[in-house]
Amino acid sequence: MPLRDLRRNHRYDLRLPFELLRSGSRSPVQSGQTCNLSSSGVLFTAPADVEIGQPIEFVITLPTGSEGTAVRLRCVGKVVRLDKTRKDPSVAATLERFEFVRGAAR
Image (cartoon, rainbow, N blue to C red; front, side, top):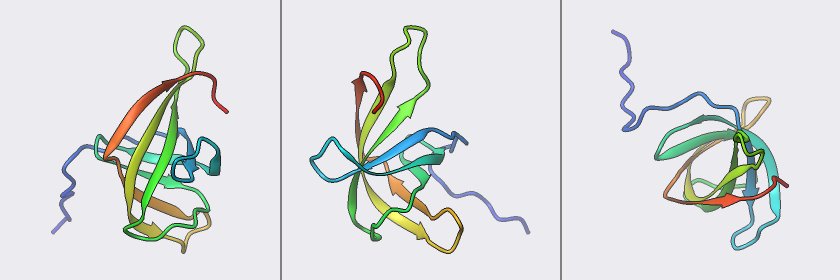
């Protein structure tokens, strides 16, 4: 019998630039990219030094709009799963709160 996907929200396979931030800082600690994204969570690849249950802050850069300005999402969430066995380690985190930040990508 096939396994059912029990996720609450549909995940979109999106490869977007991702920056992990130190809490309260604007400078990225690690960079990577998203694997998939939903309205309640994100899976990303980055050599992140995080633990399950740890709160994290991150920025996702969305594709540049017609105005040529980058739109970035500054997000707060919590680490829910780690997979350090793969070549590109992956981290799953909730997306609990976010704000749009306009301006050039760093």
